[in-house]
Image (cartoon, rainbow, N blue to C red):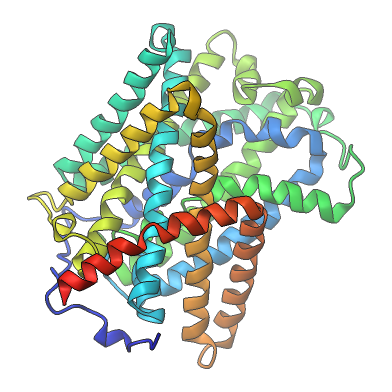
Length: 443
């Protein structure tokens, strides 16, 4: 397919992006909090236990993954600096490779968001049951809690983009507090004697690094969140690159320091068997330590869910704006929120949530959650290709960064396995009828 020049790609009939005023839009900190808030979810609270059997070589895995995440953030920041249109991956891909490629990447990312919303709401219900046992009494109660938090936060997002961004900033700051408490606790009362041996399983160093890097990589999914609502970001071309790079550096530092602190506070034999490593680490604070961490995990999960719900409205809106999805999805309310897109995405996520609580579909749902991560990695790879296309002749250093980021994303996708990749292709193909139907109506 012939790639059109970027200036020809904007549909003259599409609804234009309307940037919000400085009082209502995303500034640096709200944009930073969107990326950080989506990245820091429930997963970080389990990673120290997952990494403990591999020993302290896992810190090298963290460094490899952090470096890869920073390269992806640099690529996304560079791409974001060229446009103030909402859509992130979709916009970058469409400008570089044309309409169909842009739609496929937008569809892939939207799928990842839908499954993430369903999965994170389940995690929220689990933590809610830990804090208030009556909320976890049975599957029906848990499902109601999970569905309720989806629609409460959808309501916040429907009220307006500014309100959703403010909630995201507050939740992000709150979720960082328990991580900082554990880091401080590790420094004050932890001991390096608890740090596990470098490579206790005596794995080949390359294999150990690859395994730990793959495990820690999942914690960085969400880097891209700050680039998606570009039309609502103040001075987007300058703000977004700074915010997502700062966000990635912040998260990398928090993850590595928190993992080290937990390992210093909990003996490796206990840590490797722990189902709540941060709660075990917090026991040094006394009987209230575990409850504090559970509440922190609850806030962390809700913040990640809020960010994903926001993205679940922004991505369909961006595609519909250009005429490649039903026009109703591009409609904004007085608060500049894509109301139809938000309701559609949250409804589908709620249906998936119900499937999760029906016994026969749990395994299938779990598999689709892994597909969510895979569906995010593909846009990372295509965005790196888009930057490579921009910079291959004019900016060789950026081209090298794009090549390394592309390799990182490909290796991560390969780690999902052939079966997952094949199912990923099927899910992507399921979006093609939407594209061709919308294109025919457009013409």
